[in-house]
Image 1 (cartoon, rainbow, N blue to C red):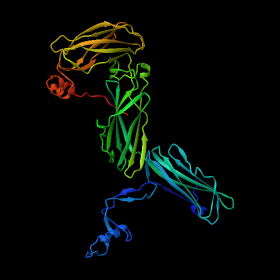
Image 2 (cartoon, helix red, strand yellow; image 1 turned 180 degrees about the horizontal axis):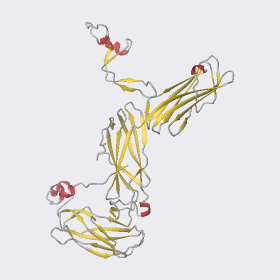
Image 3 (cartoon, rainbow, N blue to C red; image 1 turned 45 degrees about the vertical axis):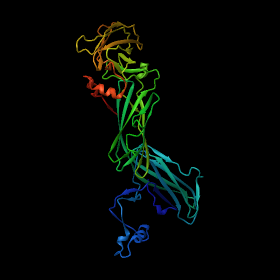
Image 4 (cartoon, one colour; image 1 turned 90 degrees about the horizontal axis):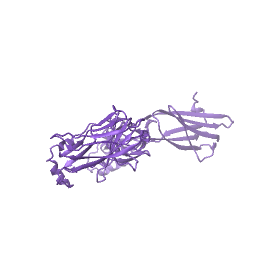
Length: 460
């Protein structure tokens, strides 16, 4: 569109972006005007016999940074609120009729109308020397080039329609980078680690970082100490290119779930149980959204919300085994009983033979065996059964292997290498922390429980 010379119009259009000043380093010395307060205070503090010279000693002060007012439209960060002051002034001695003002914000994919003078009647008559103005605000939601289009329509005294349009271009930049890692624990829990990095050119303060869970999950933040204090500093200040991590524990909203561990077959890694309904279990992948609020070093507020975070999809193609009501600690020589639930997640019926065999050797960690049949299970059905062992070694005891054989298909056999882990203690063990710490030194295999296992992490 061909631009019209503003001098030929009866009205003047002025646009100014409303933004906070920036801190700029201009050296250790800043000079002041003679009438400034700093100048007067400096002269008052000087001794009568001081050699002021040319007066420069009284008009200088040490300053690391000074405030610089906005010199242009500049740039803005995603999630911040764009604000601009728009003014239309009648520069003639005659009234201007049918004055309307319109403002649009155009991005790479959309064009948004920013409402002005919502409570005023439109069009209006602008008296000689009169002014109409308004402030527009919009929370930018897209990265890239944006153009503010301001248009004024009016009628000349001769009745001709005139239009004045101005364009203001600015950039919307990315303020932070978010990376997430999911860890599916052995129990019915998911752990989410969210890393937030400051990719701006100035520091900002993280005011809030919360995980808004979906209706299928509940979230427990793990970013505070037992006394309620945050694991971070009070201000959560992030310097440019610095990052910090936030940890959350995510559980399914299932009041009937009492599962302790789950083992799935024909899959790379064991998955946590979600619900008793296998079909629904495969669909509950949306965990929630991260809601992040920050402020710049001068208080400019910004807010971002991530897209829906998705955990690894649950897959259990053939058989699913859950361990129920298993104790963490037992005394040596006592019977350790735990319940199991097996679910047929295939499309075909199953009739399972359950076999648990202990090695009869001096190095065996437990004694006990089991060999029995279960009732036939149709697709989606489950049944529960108990297993019992007697630990014969102190320390961490791994109960394995458990062999499940589908007698309807003789070649279909499932072997569980690690059914459940239990920590075996002396018969005089009690729950006192001091006693437990002293006893732990005597256990020959207790150090094995301190070794960390490598886990697979997913970056979204």
